[in-house]
Picture 1 (cartoon, rainbow, N blue to C red):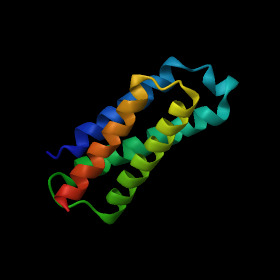
Picture 2: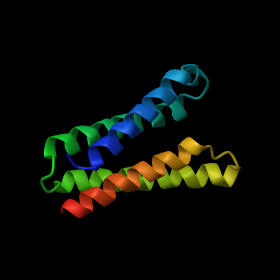
Picture 3: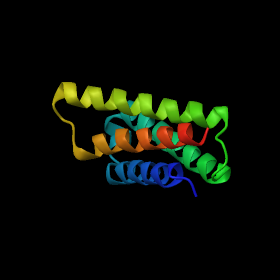
Picture 4: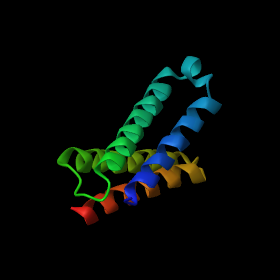
Length: 108
């Protein structure tokens, strides 16, 4: 098993827990909730693709998804740092997405 799969699975679980604990966000901040749902779909797709590809070389689509995940998580981290509200889970998302991309590039 590759290292990208557990990292992507952890990203999926973190995002799902974030959404489950903040169900009121769907009413109070629907745009933020939609972005979080989009990230959940992205993480879940990455987990599925990295599990399916096992230790073989990743497809171009998987590499692109991993790059998008890292870019998105770095943008979220920058926004939270700028506002001074960066919690540990924000750093975790960036670290997990970097691990997924690094492993995908390693297997290339």
